[in-house]
Length: 188
Image (cartoon, rainbow, N blue to C red; front, top):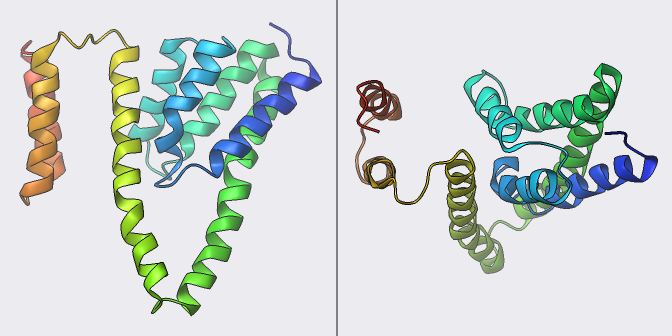
């Protein structure tokens, strides 16, 4: 697969536009990244997409590292290591520039006007949007790797874990360990 200048520009502009929608972090727009990179453009496979997110989330550092890995895989598929290096820069600049600028300006304005009712309402209104975007991301990641909705024990574990995180003070690492143990024992 060989990329044209129009393909590189389209990649940059898509991540640029997603940056402005990434309320709650870049991971919240992963479903649209999957739609664009895997389903529409066929620049990545499901496995490459899911592996990029899994590796980046397991590694220490910022949550946005998965964008660099997605860019790396797109670039490797497009033309080798130099293309991969360029794709990493395009995707990272595309996702970081608009949201960073907007966040900085909004934070300055919000701090100056923190007592206004509209500012408080805006902050409270964002919570359900972030939660819905994270649920959509989890659904895309779970179903793109072949986990069908008929795999009820996995989905039951996800719901129970979500409720435990929300309603108790059990540390997430204990829940992660319990899930790993259930998987290792073959229950999931």
